[in-house]
Image (tube, rainbow over all chains, first blue to last red; front, side, top):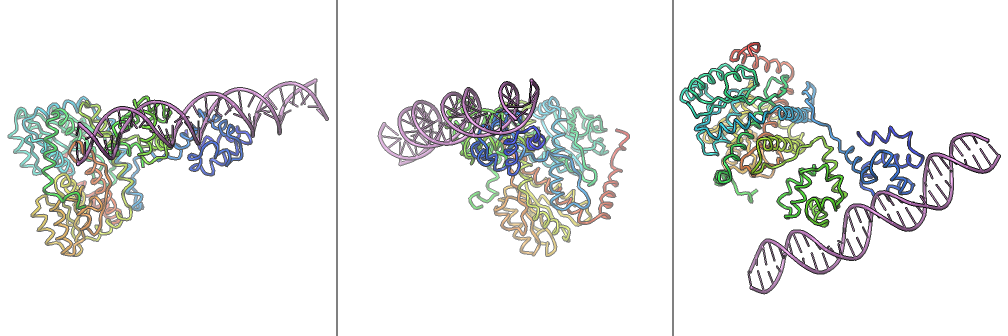
Amino acid sequence: MNILEKITQHNALFSKSERKVAEVILANPQTAIHSSIATLAKMSGVSEPTVNRFCRRLDTKGYPDFKLHLAQSLANGTPYVNRHVEENDGPEEYTHKIFESTMASLEVARQSVDIATINRAVDLLTQAQKISFFGLGASASVAHDALNKFFRFNVPVIYFEDIIMQRMSCMNSGEGDVVVLISHTGRTKSLVEIAQIARGNDATVMGITSKDSPLAKECNLVLSLEVPEDTDMYMPMASRIAQLILIDILATGFTLRRGNKFRENLKRVKDTLRGSRFDKRSD
Amino acid sequence: MNILEKITQHNALFSKSERKVAEVILANPQTAIHSSIATLAKMSGVSEPTVNRFCRRLDTKGYPDFKLHLAQSLANGTPYVNRHVEENDGPEEYTHKIFESTMASLEVARQSVDIATINRAVDLLTQAQKISFFGLGASASVAHDALNKFFRFNVPVIYFEDIIMQRMSCMNSGEGDVVVLISHTGRTKSLVEIAQIARGNDATVMGITSKDSPLAKECNLVLSLEVPEDTDMYMPMASRIAQLILIDILATGFTLRRGNKFRENLKRVKDTLRGSRFDKRSD
DNA sequence: CATTAAATGTAGTAATTTTACAACTTTTCA
DNA sequence: TGAAAAGTTGTAAAATTACTACATTTAATG
């Protein structure tokens, strides 16, 4: 519990000198946490043991412990809450609301994620002969990002935005190939169809989608994310960020599974980019 | 600034023994704040002065002051710390580490964002005749996502992955057009060139990039994000997520500026998607 | 391999907090 | 009212805790 509140509430139980201490602290808590017990005693016009007794009365172990509690109370920022953006919000408001609600959603997503499924997914990906990432609309950019990550691993990766190309690609897939389909709702018809085609060819179909959705039903493995989405804005926001983090997790699992030598390979890929960039010193 | 975050970021500057102290603290910060310098030294297997030096390196006055900062960080609503993934982490560990460090990075990003600049950016975007989003590599998928968002607003939006197309597009831009360039490092040569071309044609160039980077110098407006990136993995992770949130913020600001009637338009766009999807009841 | 610089630990010192006890104040009840 | 009891407060010494100076070790450089 917030110790500042506790001080005000306990007021009646304090003795005369203790109350002096309370006043000084409440008047300027920031100063208090940076003072020694001697300084605070002098500021309150009481002796050091009195300050110590004051601390004990608030159920702290002593003065240093009290300062710790006080510091925490002062730092107590607002925890992340899913606050919706409203009509009359200014830039300050909507910026913070979006950050906060995204983080709140990620917290929910973090808790809903199933580790065993992730592990299984990493298994399948490391053994895959060919990996495809398909998504449409907002999920297309997630698939695009996945391409960028997995491409570095020097495994055959496929990504198309075009549903005809996606379809043809799945027609050509087979056993040992993994098709990753990304859709927040899991109700996009053409993706469900693609899933069916891929499975028909014995490819492994992995879905990053809502559980129990039509798409999920067609998958061999479903990586489901429970993300509360702010539908007021009519745009996918938090959901695709959670999907991206899932991609990061899969990519990380992949590199760890491949071991140390493989990490060096990644470093080489990154180093190659240097040629396309200005030198860091020229910043 | 969150001291736990600071510890992880400063890691390179620590000496060997100081790093031991850092590890012990990060592993169990709650214990640390209730320990004396002697106890903590013993737990870390180092001497007391080393702990003291560790505290000073983090710009605190000494051990007690450090504890105060630590206490504040723990209370700060953000238990999220940027913990790096390690060689022998299992799925459970790396999954949580990635979620946590992403969230920690977002918290840093949130604090580094400049509201006035965002407001100015929204201004420019709402007045734009044509908006282009360009990025390369990992930032390409961010640009792709921006396309998806702004396309719904029924304004002319351009997005290319191809650097030749990007270049040509900038050649054809002019006054009243806004070119948004996305690059975490801000040192990608071809993007800097594009920025120069666009500015040469009197287009407004907006950069989502690091401040003081070569790209930033060419921009009319820089939306900078300070995101601590885990370079161990050799892949951009948190940085692009922060960029996406920035896109969300700009898009949100855009819709709010356009007013109520415009929101209905968004709804219509979303409703149109229904035809491509399975009915919700069929879930 | 020698020299220098950096890092770490030891031991003593200083600061800070806590305890024990004495002095003072207030309350209680004959 | 006034003496005993209970509670409050302060002084001074003890204990804990943190810090400094210096010696030793370890690493880096030529």
